[in-house]
Length: 87
Image (cartoon, rainbow, N blue to C red):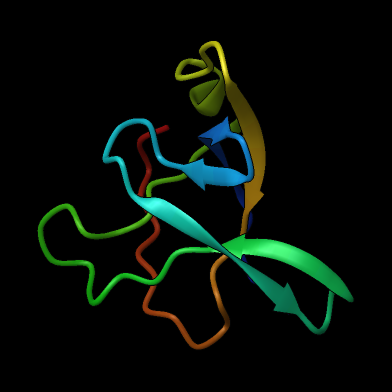
């Protein structure tokens, strides 16, 4: 299961979901332990600005705009993670 959860504001356009800040498109994937489809974004490393930035609900709400929604973000158990204290 997940050790950490956070919230992420993503833009929903048709059947696509993407990050409005970095214009990264999220892929729809089946998550077996959820038993349903979800969205996933793979990044090669946490170097530079390649990571997935998620935060508290209050922080995610700051980015909420027309066409956006708030999503629960949880890292893959095998993914490299870095826990920050901002937001």
